[in-house]
Length: 148
Image (cartoon, rainbow, N blue to C red; front, top):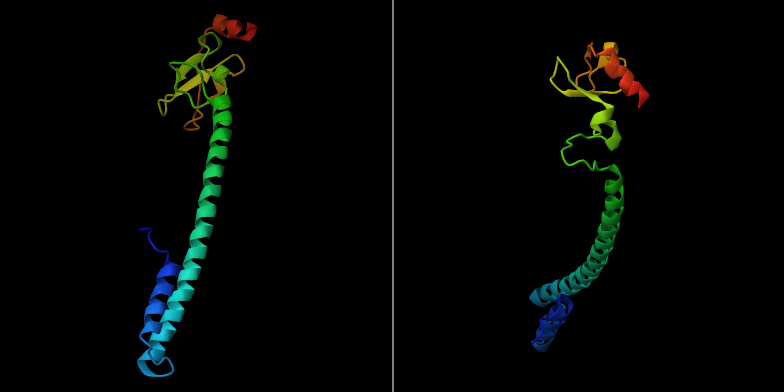
């Protein structure tokens, strides 16, 4: 046997009360009739809300799938492809090609700063802590970076 809906249950109870031939014009019968009307109205409203919730749930599922596809596209472009890289950058070339940079440890916070030919080693600013510090780099190393 299939389970009855709220609306069907409310109608069933209303039928039972009508079968009892209660006087719905006064006393307890009037209260029972008013409660049955309330229950019927609530059952209709709840069924409508359940239908709307099902529709919204389906729509949210579609949005989630679409956003998953967009996220996949965006993440593929931003991920670093280096196996040993733990950088947070969007451009893998900025720090992952060992021939193009020097790794320098910030004396203030200990974070690793990456130096290439475009940065003046005497005017370094740590991106993590904001402290300015100097770094001595051999002239031939800077020339090699500039040539690349």
